[in-house]
Amino acid sequence: MTEQTFAEKISGNGALQLIGVIANCSGIISSALGIYSFFESEGQPDNSTILSAIDRLQQTLDTDFAQLGDLIQQQTQIIVDTVNRDGMALALSSSDVATDRIQAFLGNGDKDALETAEAESIRGVQFFNELGLSSYADLLFFLPGLVKAGSIRIFVLASEPLAVREPSKVIVDDISSMVNLLSNMIDTIKSTVDAAHTVNEKSHIVRCPVHPQIRENAEPPVGAPFRNVTVIDGYYHEERGQILAFFDAQQGANPCEQPSGYEGEALAAAQQARAQGVTDELAFIGIPYFEQILQSWRNLVAVPTLIDLNGTWKSGGVPGPVISVTGPSIAVDMSAYKRPMASGTIVDKSDITVTFPDDHTYTAKLQLPNVILWSNHSAWTKV
Image 1 (cartoon, one colour):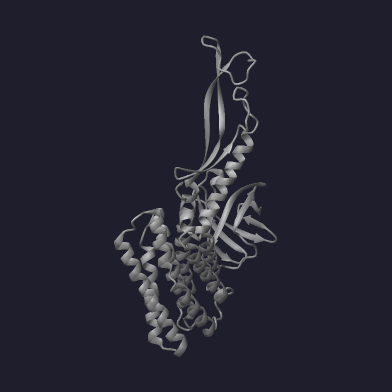
Image 2 (cartoon, one colour; image 1 turned 45 degrees about the vertical axis):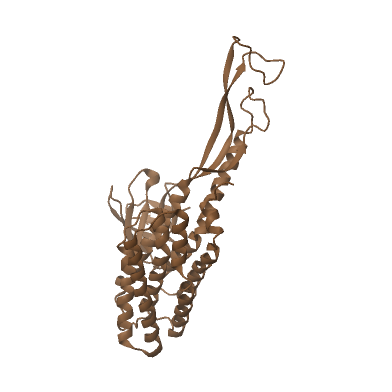
């Protein structure tokens, strides 16, 4: 019996039911605060809407996310630091207190309950901000906890009366830090899974006669001249040292007549199997749903602009810069030009400013339908 892959182990241990917990969580946040922005908050979500969402969130999280973390830890056979495990339990207990207190405030207007909710929700998230994790297994284990603590923190912020709410910049910075942490955790997990799946070649060398033989596949007589021929047997999709699928590149071809002509087909099939393997493993872990939660958090601090800045842009007609926006902050990946990352800010819906560390700081005007016109008179067009 062959050893199960990580994804198969999780699938066979009921984790797919737990993945539904994550999916429900992303839907709850989006349905309660889907059209709300902390950046331009002239109004406030209805108390009953938030109460209903928190109640559903609490029921969902009581399933509990810790079970998913324990399951992942078990399957990866990595012992997560006991101190950090205890720390997460304490952090999530703070989030539970915040949940209870914000419900009390929304129900009867208890200001002391609001203050407690604010303080405890901050403590819940603070633990994850200070973890500084890099281990793949640790990231997987603590990811659900961050989602729980972050979601409660967001609902507490949304519940604060406008008269006593912190300035929008403070709130945006608060949520943006959570967004960056969740994004970095997801990216690290995805890159680790991607690197674990590889495509490799299997080949061997055969001795073949220099001149055609009457009988196929015959070894040249002893002392007769021969030539070495490399035979590519096929390609295989491997995950962490375990071969998952092999694709034959010979299909019965004469080993002395190479290439067989099937190599390209076998390689393409192995590459497709690898891509599907990565997708399947990420799905079993629940990463697509965590990404939905990440997007719902990003939407809360989104700054409306004339055009959507996120995505790939063309400079001089050639695709290169990739822009990502979190709240009012802009990040520009210039690696296509072997240049360092640039960063900037959205000034208003039509204006941005970006600092390129190997050049200068430039302002830019956004022009419909898809143009960034820079202060140095250059222009980017969205791909």
